[in-house]
Picture 1 (cartoon, rainbow, N blue to C red):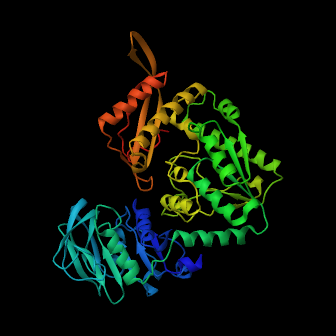
Picture 2: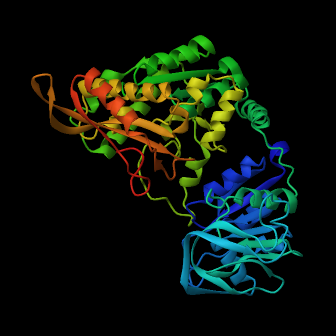
Picture 3: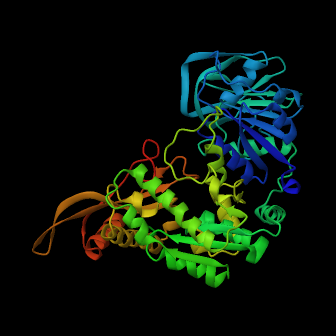
Amino acid sequence: MAQITADRVLILDFGSQFTQLIARRVRESGVYCEIWPFNVDPQKIADYAPRGIILSGGPASVTEDVAPKIPEIVFEMGLPVLGICYGQQAMCAQLGGLVEGHNHREFGRAFVEVTDTCALFDGIPEGWAMGAREQVWMSHGDRVTRLPPGFRPVGTSDGSPFAAIADDERRFYGVQFHLEVVHTPHGAAILRNFTHAIAGCRGDWTMAGFKQAQIDAIRAQVGSGRVICGLSGGVDSAVAAALIHEAIGDQLTCIFVDHGLLRLNEADEVVKVFRDRFNITLVHRDASEMFLSALDGVSDPEIKRKTIGGLFIDVFEEEAAKLGGADFLAQGTLYPDVIESVSFTGGPSVTIKSHHNVGGLPARMRMKLVEPLRELFKDEVRVLGLELGLPKSLIGRHPFPGPGLAIRIPGAISREKLDLLRRADAIFLEELRLNNLYDAIWQAFAVLLPVRTVGVMGDGRTYDLACALRAVTSTDGMTADVYPFEVTFLSRVANRIVNEVRGINRVTYDITSKPPGTIEWE
């Protein structure tokens, strides 16, 4: 991918929850970038040869002895450097400035007064001119109280005398506020000034170029070998399969293991798209009875996930063996999976839930991985899917968990409960589409609760199950806000579910954000 990523930026991660947002904003401007932990081998940074380096925020305090340090090579390469929040503080502390804790902390919306001109602010329409007062988003307790030699202040706020700083000669810049969040209205434009005007990137990284580069890379990696790909019905595996098929054609065989935990009619849709429309060699194994038998009586969510994941590998291996084996296994691993597999401290991330792609294969499978999407975020995968000609109805699908509906039924599952949930979920999604709401939502689904409630239908009393509806907005699934439906819409959906799905007599709406909750219930 050298011809596409020659103009690339490196982001060093100090643990901010917003680091991925920095990368997304940079890529949205047509500049390729990657996120590496701050303690990466300095030689790797030199070998990567970026046009510029961005230092993320982070939860640590520069005033602590164990505070993460910026690799010295960052300041020795002659490259532009932009420090954001902790990144600014660490840069100042290491270059001879002073950072102190302060009673006047800033969290949330704040305002910066532009006190001098700066290359970061040049040409931004309707703001960031000298003397302007601009809204930003702050999240800091410490602050810079003395600048290093060579720096000058270009912006100040109530809680930070050096809210924006510049060393024009070395092209080192720092901001105390977060450019990457939407609450800093012109943050993306400031980032673009850094990547394009200061670092000199052309901004010519496109998904069409990525597609062709990956096709070339797949052909070079696979050669004349055979590849098998596990289809799940989700967007990631679908795009991976379509991309690999375009690269190597009949050398690819897809295996679709139907575990009986998919949404209504989803298995039929997968077969129709890949076997009938794209003419991809597809093995469809209906293993629903095997999975449901293994899950009988299992109520612990982590055991559910591990049971499904382990059995999926067993069935997949069995079908692969029938094909006479293969040299490569394709996976729809995405860039957030890669980032989250190693924390910014270089150690293992906290396990929120299992059954992720990253981590590789059982050694006994003796296949090499093909992961053509591992450099992309979810929204970029959707754009690639459209480039490949996949139907918008498939590409635009909301994320769906690997363990399927098993983790949308808290407690033990059964075929009867799965049927109830499928029908309720289908009604919810149908109403979203009928009301042009589906594409405005990151993820929406129904959850069948292990709770029975009293109801009245006609002249009779019911004692049936309750279900919850969940709908959130998000950019990448890392954080999420509840979607603010009109009450009339929720009432219509609840009315349809209760009337059309016998066995459910009560519907609730989950209004928990992430954090503190997760998007899925289990």
